[in-house]
Amino acid sequence: MLRKTFLRGLVLAALAAGPAHAAEGMANAELMLPVPTVTIYPGDTIKESMLRMQAYPATYRARTAVIDAAAAIAGRTARRMLLPGEPVPVNAVDDPRLVSRGAPTQMIFEENGLVITAVGAPLQNGGLGETIRVRNTDTNRIILGTVMADGRIRIGAQ
Image 1: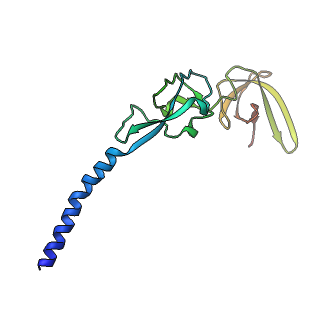
Image 2 (image 1 turned 45 degrees about the horizontal axis):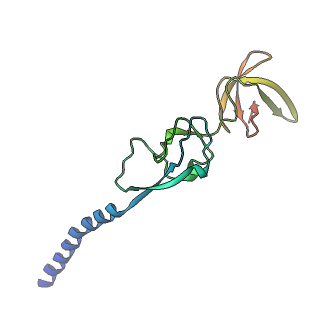
Image 3 (image 1 turned 120 degrees about the vertical axis):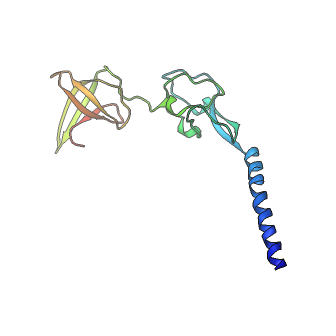
């Protein structure tokens, strides 16, 4: 009986001490976030040399969701101004544009060895793999196409 009481006391003491030790560990933990070292303007392509890792307390709560890895930012385009030393919100960066709205772009249709090319005017900006609307400049018809890595737009069956 005495042994059971002693063991129960040990278990209760361990449970009581657990959250306190966990809270201490959380207070000492740091959250490393990538931040710009220079002002990055909208439309700029972000290079890894423009970023550094900065420590924040584990309890840090950003106003919006922020990016937690430098690799997730490098090579992307800023949608708005990013200030030095400030964490980068998820919605502040975008994939680079391969196609710009209104800029004449080559459209390509390929099927069973048949290749047809034409010039189109994109009605929206587009990045790799995005489906966008394009106006065929010869017929003025609006069609859907997928942006390819070389900046052309693939039309038809994929």
